Structures are given as structure tokens and as C-alpha cells.
Length: 354
Ligand SMILES: [Zn+2]
Ligand SMILES: [Zn+2]
Image (cartoon, rainbow, N blue to C red; front, top):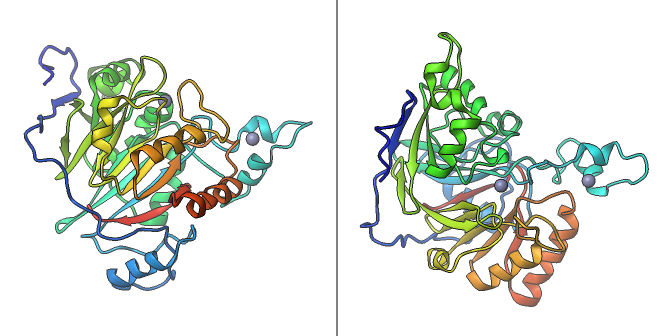
């Protein structure tokens, strides 16, 4: 627990209760889930929706079908590295043509990627709850594209992996929601990252500096530890990882889905938390090698072989990752090794059981 009674600011801060006493999380996802393809018009029952998912292994972009509110799904709000894809400098290069960025510049192209972010739409009998992982620099543009597309209205919580700009740069843009949709948004953040927010977004933390009438985001900060916590009835287990030497980032496990978007090394003590993983969403920056702060594809694949999830989707890709080419390579791994590994893409929507 962190005592925040001494903190001299007016923004709301709550300590999150420890859940170490809870039994290990053992709920199973009951079906093999694939990217979906289904008709645009009309409602049809959940069973048929899942059948459609089971029948389709191809990654398609048709995303408008609505799930019943008691069912859960995840939506990839962004799958690209910090700089975004395409790079502006690739498009203005007078000498060298970057094939991936040229493709990504076309509207609707699958190589177009914004900052990594995932929306968990947690279905409960009382209605679906929208839990966002990270709101980075390009959050506004992602939300502009995907929220109307998927009929997403509220943001019920934001969970923060770490405090780099591509994870927290969009906190200011949450003002649209707290001014026009809902009174406030709960932010779940590790103390070290909250300390960064006190500098980068000081006016969202210490609201006493705000000129009366200025309509900034109204955020409630909840400090999380490296142990399970509950967000709107959903248990979230932090997955501590290294994101560069000496710099900690958090992945998150919910149900049997593990999300690790920014990682250069996984500490031994985190592996037990990854056991019996149904869907692993894992950092893979570039096709050839790792960087000092991110897994490259070879290392990411090594980890997949070690963790043995049922299915893996890579995220956080830079412009060197050509969706079509890398996907072809990954398909071969299914044939040669039985590895179910794919690239995610912005707007990918997967029904899940939580
Ligand atoms: Zn490029
Ligand atoms: Zn980062």
C-alpha cells in the first residue's frame, strides 16, 4: 500500500487494495479464437458469431458487428511503435522508397499503425465495461477511427504499462470523455509512472493549478503494485518486465490473455504468471534483431517457444515489419513447428471469454 495522504495536490489518488489472498486465476477460454470475418448488416446470435470466428483464420478488417453486452472482446487500438507507421521521413525521402511506409500511407492499409494500445471490452450482465491499456501520443487519432467504428462510447478505466510518451501522451485527450461523456476516468498506474505524470501532466494531477472553467481531463489516479488488482470486477495481474536496462514496464494478464507491449527482457519471477496462457500479445519491434528496449522478432519467437501460449499476436511493430511478408514467414512456423503466431494490426477485434 502507498500512503498518499501526504501528497500536496488536489487530484484524486487512491491506493489499490492488495489481492494477494485471491486464489490463482484459472478461468479457461473455451474456444480457439481467430480474427473475424462476418456480414456487415443485422444482428445475429453469439453462437453464430463464434462459429464465424472459428471458421475464419484469415485476418480481415470487417469490424462492425456488435456482440451482445454480456460477452467480452479485445480490440487492438494501436499496434505500432512510438514513431508510428508510416514515418514522415520515409514518405519525403527523395532517394529511397520505403515500401512499407508507402503502403501504410494508403487509407485503410494494414501496415498503418499507431501507438500500442488495447481495449478490453469486459462483458458483464450489467453491461460492457471498456478498459483501455495505455493512451499514447496518437490516442486521439486511434479513438477517432475506432470508437465510432465499433460503437464505443465510454472509457471506464485506463491501465498504464509505463510512462513513455507513446503510453501516456494521450491523457490530455481524455478531456473529451470527461467533459462530454462521463464525469471522470480512473487511471491505474504504478507509483514510479505516477511520479512521471506529476511532471508531464502536472495540471491533471494537481488540479489546483487549473484556471477555473478550463475543461481539462478529470482523472482519478489509483496506484497499483506489482500484484493483482480489480478494475470493474475484472482481475488484472501485472506482469513486470524490463523495458531497457533498469527500466521497468508492466504487462497485464486478464483471464488467460497476457499483454506485454514493451519489453527487452522478462525476469524469471514473471514466467510463472504466464503459465497456461491462451492468447499472448507480445512486443516484436523489428524482423531482424532486438533493440536495447524492445524484443525483435527472433527473440519474441524464442519467448513464445518458452512460454508456450496457445496463440500469439505480435504488437509494437516498426516500419521494417511488412505485414504481408512477416505474416507469410509466421504462417510457415505453423507448418514447421506448430506455432500459432500472427501479427496484430490496428482495428483487430477478437471475441474472448473472461
Ligand atoms: Zn518507412
Ligand atoms: Zn516505452
